[in-house]
Length: 171
Figure 1 (tube, rainbow, N blue to C red):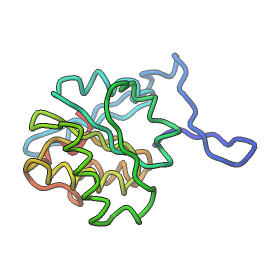
Figure 2: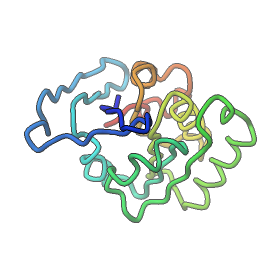
Figure 3: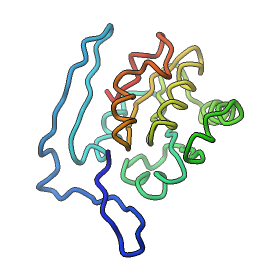
């Protein structure tokens, strides 16, 4: 989950890690599935997303309207298309899924591309499902922003088909 601090108006705002925090407590957990994948845990990982996903032919970001204005720029993905859906369960619908798939097609994603799902559980579920359907499955990089989404994105059982399961967690 992203670190948060309270502002005087009561809104939640992310607190950027200091250079001393960067990499402090970084942990990589190897998940022994077939195929296996790594889950990275630690402060300052958002700054690594661009470098970690450069191996894909194209990238696109799916997020929500709460995470996007607060954290999207921290990914460092300047020329990468992004789409923000409405936050919450209301976005778990066929019309929203259709819009996400159309966004992926308009972004010229191909079989060598990945979708970056940056948000809570709804974004992770929606991104995982869309990635598994698009071109019979492309990798999805999950960047969860809530504790529950973190737990769910490491299991991939709710949203991904077996074809794209290997991409269900951050590489």
